[in-house]
Length: 563
Image (cartoon, rainbow, N blue to C red; front, side, top):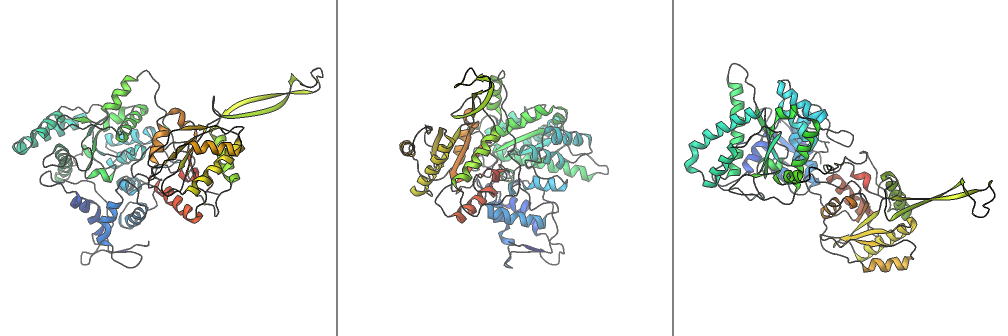
């Protein structure tokens, strides 16, 4: 789509809002005020701003709906593309070709402002090169809050709402102000909110962060004067109050608090809240900072979240307790982005067995050898260190030594959802049998839809095609809707499975989640057989585009599909 914008004043979006904590909860006016109205401010007040789509139709009334479509649980590639193009033309700082989703538009805006490229496998942000230097500069008064914000956002991508405080003393000043405000409205507050606010006043921000759970979902905690609504309203009001004080006097007063709008979806109805101590980040080690934010991200993706309405629910309480219990154990190994991100071209025809075999072999060699597996690799070489078996007395004839090594196991996940026909399934299985026969290796197997079948070890080595097919027929084949994430979680739940080469055979008909989740490093994809190739390529392209925020190198993992 080609968007034409005229008479629009280039905008800078500000995440600060003060949604009322009284009456019915309705975030839509705030969404319009923060994300839409700035895009429609005219350059010449005598005439309105004009935004036309490729057909010359006025799209100003559709902007809010398009933005909201980008904030769902799954990625809407069409809305993402349109909104990015719109933001690229209407914002002062925004690169419409960014790989960041619209849900992280404030981070993309800050990154563009400071000339920082978006994170990628070749551009890594971490505590040493981004977060700690930005914290020191903000603490010294020579850096902007947006630099500290984008450093955290680009390094860790937390799906939450945050507020930064310059120090623990700045946080204490906020608590004093909050207590004064609460006293004036105490008669109208519910007992649960008063109790939770009193507990909040007892918090200390002497460490790197303090994080709280506010809601179970978007429908929770939305009653009038609820703690979730009241706390965010007070934090936003305090930031606004600080900014007003900084600009009202004759002398510049430094602002020691601000908003960290990591995810737009969490800005207006946050399920969690992270309070950040800038001074503590400036003085901490890189390992401590990284460990803290990894713990926060782990807590955000945890399926178990218990929220109490009578006591503060801390976001990281369970992971911290688990970490203390396993203090003597070695720390988890955090993966890095996979292969390089490159412009790739899709094949114009379906891959042959040899094409897939070549790609699988290449990946196995790249993964390296393991101590033991079902994938046995034998090599034989001539050597004079061993006597010749036929002529043991002839020292001029070398003997032979056979060495045994092990390549990573091969684990196959076949999509058997409703969009996969019996013919597609049989063709995929026969292709795998031929590849397994060529490699002469046993393999692990699961079928999946929205359910996952039991894991089975299929013994392929030294068996005929007929015998192998009979073994496949015994494996239960699940059916239903498609769900990739359960396969991701299943792989990530086991260190053994994470070391295998996992190959998913699918038609790519699944929308990835909008949130950043952990994609298995050694999971690759291959197209299902006996399907229209043009349709398959379109589905794979859509899937790859939607996965950019989760794994930017995903195109390199589409085996048999790229040239």
